[in-house]
Image 1 (cartoon, rainbow, N blue to C red):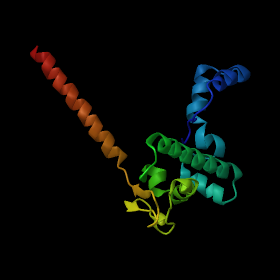
Image 2 (tube, rainbow, N blue to C red):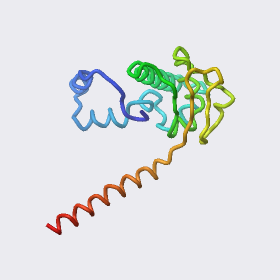
Image 3 (cartoon, rainbow, N blue to C red):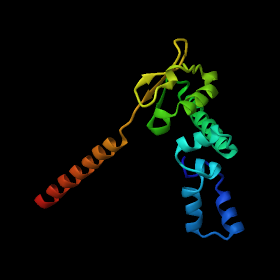
Length: 172
């Protein structure tokens, strides 16, 4: 996550609250606004900024990316175990669509699953494309999203349902 914590032992919350004399609001702010990649890198929630800093020798930024790549690969591996393997790995949204560095690092950690990324194809940014090598057991794709359009569609569904419910209520 950009600024939110990921998995953590729940007792960490009460430990920190007691040790640092934090309120619930303080703890909420730390977990949601000062953790994640931002909490490690200390510079930004924008992965472009973190990557730039890491390539310039920023140790905290490099650590933040390493942790992000490892945890992403670990979650994919957990899903692969639950599903008995994977046939397709799809990268989407901001980092997935445009983050060739992150895609490469994540795929390297998943090679044991048969994931083989074509580094030339991986230069793709923001376009739908297959990124796997011909001999990869797992097909790798990047598919752009239009999050604003999806939010608008879901909002329209909810508003339409509410309007229908109003008409039903009025007819009763």
